[in-house]
Image (cartoon, rainbow, N blue to C red; front, top):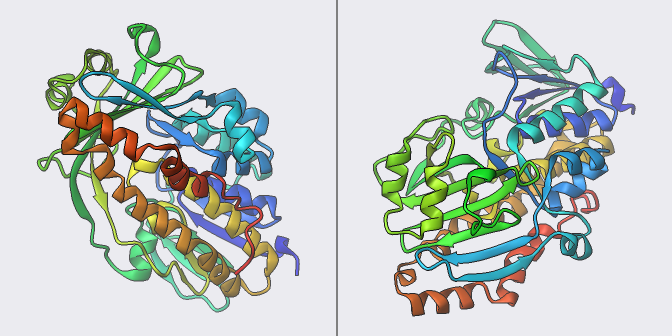
Length: 401
C-alpha cells in the first residue's frame, strides 16, 4: 500500500517533531505539524549530537549542512572543581568517525532547529501550522483525531505527540504524570569565547566536578561561543522552565570557592537562565491505537548523558521505518515502533539519573580522593561501557520487533 495515501499529524514542532516530520516525509507520507507557538524558534543554548544522532542527519541528506552549522569537538576531559587538575577521557573529532562511523557535533539549538525546519519545508512547503495548540483527543474510525485550541478538528491516519516534557498528548492518553524534583537545579548560558581567558578550553567538552555541583562547557558555532551548564544541589528552585532568568550574582554564589576559570566563565555569561531538574517515571506504553508519543513526551531525561535530542532523532528514524514497513496497518506499525524503542530509551533515562552520583560526589572535596574517584570512574573500560552502546547504536539498521 502506498504511503502517500496516509496522512500523519504531529503535535509539536521542536527538534523531535521536526525530525519525525522529516523522517516520515522522506518515507513518502503526507505530514502536517501543528505547533502552539505563534512563531518558530529555539532557546539560546547548546545541544550535543553524538554519532547515534549525526548518522541520522546524514541519512536524511543533511550531512553537508550539519558540518557547516555544527562544531566538531576534539574530545572530552574532566577537571577538578577547585584545582583544575585535568584528565582526558574520550577522544572525539576524527576518532569518533573511525570508532562509531559518524561524527560528534555540538550545535546552538536554534541552528539545529533551523536545519531541520528548512529540511521539512523542502519536502513540503506548508507542512508547519502555527498557533495550533493541541487541546484534546477525539475518536475517529480507522485513524486519529485531535481538537485544537482554536476549535479546529484535525483527522489523520496517525497522530504523533512530540509536544515535549509537558506533553498534553501524553496527558490525554495516560493521565497526569508525577514529576519529582531531584534536589538539583541547573544554570545555563552562552559566552562569547573571545572574552574568555586563554586558559579555558574552547575546542572540546570539559566537565568540572565538585562535591555538590558540576559544570559542563563545550564550544558551539565553530568555537565562537561556549555553552555553559552548571548543575548544583539546591532545593529552593523547582521551576521546570528553560526561560526563567537568574542573575550572575546568584550563579556566582552557587560556585563560591571554585577555580578562577569557572568564575571567569560565569562572569561572562550573556544571560544566565535556571531550571529545576525534574525526573518522571519512564513510560512502559507509548501507543494507543493510532496515537503514539515521541521524544521528551515519553522519555524525558536528565542532561547527564546529553542524549535527549539524540533519542528524539532515533525515535523519528525508527518511527518512519516502522510506518513505511506496514502503512496498511498503522496500529501494528506504531506498536512495533514502541517495542523497538522502549528498552533503550528507558536504559538511557535510568543511567542518566544514576550519573549524578559520579559528578556530584562528596569525595571530590579532598584533592587525593578526587583523583582516585576520577581515575576509577573514568577508567577507559568504564568509559567504554558507559558510552559505546549509546554512540554505536544505529537506528537505521535496528531489526524490527
